[in-house]
Length: 140
Image 1 (tube, rainbow, N blue to C red):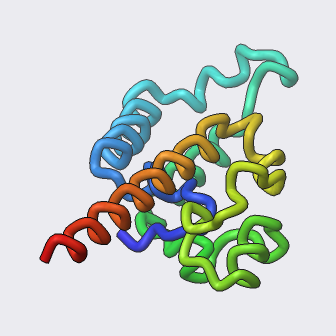
Image 2 (image 1 turned 180 degrees about the vertical axis):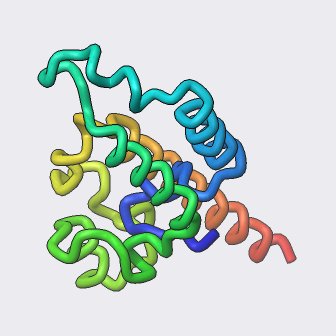
């Protein structure tokens, strides 16, 4: 999987994950087996939804199993996180010295409250690794 992003969201993406795809296939089978489109008329318009669109969505997941992430050409061009990382020449935001105070993640935090925390953890691991490498270099 190529899922690479500056913000780290792609690290947890389920697109292409075998268990996710298995679940999508099972949903398709259930729709066929139970002929769900025959009883959709039982729900008022405001409570119902378009089963054909739902089926199209399931097909989409099965035919788009690999996403290159925003670093590989997908994502939103105007994303402030992406723009900032590119301008700074960073491989990911976890390499940014200003990550703790960064407000560019605000629009993501409602839906993904752990995204910045996860990057901070990565940042701490990177710093620890660099520190240990420095210590090893001093002792040899």
